[in-house]
Image 1 (cartoon, helix red, strand yellow):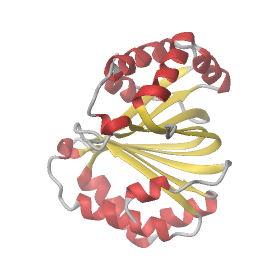
Image 2 (image 1 turned 180 degrees about the vertical axis):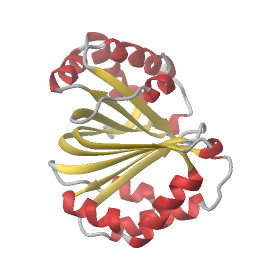
Image 3 (image 1 turned 180 degrees about the horizontal axis):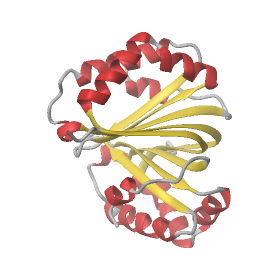
Length: 119
Length: 119
């Protein structure tokens, strides 16, 4: 399932949780260093976790990106955080891929969606 | 203040609020239609609001983007939502700039940051 397909899944109504990962790629992201393959693999793994609701991601040409994964509850987030393969990716991220990152865990309280009207 | 400068401001410790705005630009964002100027202006206006803590934003080449603004409390979000100039931008966004958007209000409960070690 691609990131786009995952993002387009309808989420259930709130409350649910968001893990907000904001990151600046090292060197502006000009060198891949295995990053793309890891990101795809992490998406695939996350989507299989119990309690995973969806993900959305955007990265600009300056190498700054935001990925938000949505989860049913805190327990789902804790399991994903402790996943062995994910732990290795986290370590590589710290040492190789990211110049800086911020991680925030937030409880989504309200949500609205709007799609352009089809005429 | 640029988006980058705002994003690099250190936020206070949680709890605080995040307004997560995910959007798909109409036509993949190939036509500007005044969008860039509006986005800059909204950033400038938001940064002046009481309770504004910071913002971060990323948009990829496919026109999908995520902007997250951070706020001290729900009252700050309500005031910003009702700002007259912001209301006009919201209407234009719905009719002109966005193919689809999702808006989520979330309470940030935990936050971690990591900058690459300077050796």
